[in-house]
Image (cartoon, rainbow, N blue to C red; front, side, top):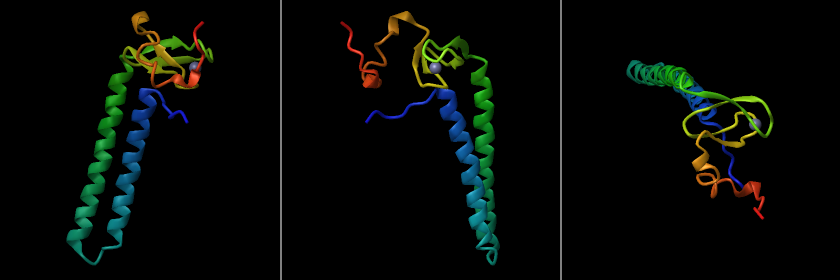
Length: 119
Ligand SMILES: [Zn+2]
């Protein structure tokens, strides 16, 4: 089975979103301990920290987005963002590279699902 890969920005976005959820879950757990002020405060603070962390990550995505290059995916022909020298299409997970020298090199082992043997 080939592992699932997604583009870097999508990955970071998922990470930021899960941080928000973790933050809310932690805060929610804190409510069950409302008899103890200290435990509630600890949970609330922890939950708040997660949410702050996620805003930082979202901010980071914004910074990264300015560095992305808009390319048209050769596979699905949609416009996608490439971050760094190699990234994946946001829509079809097609590996993309901006550096022709890296073509097929960095993706050789990870993306053998494509399995088209060069002849
Ligand atoms: Zn694509």
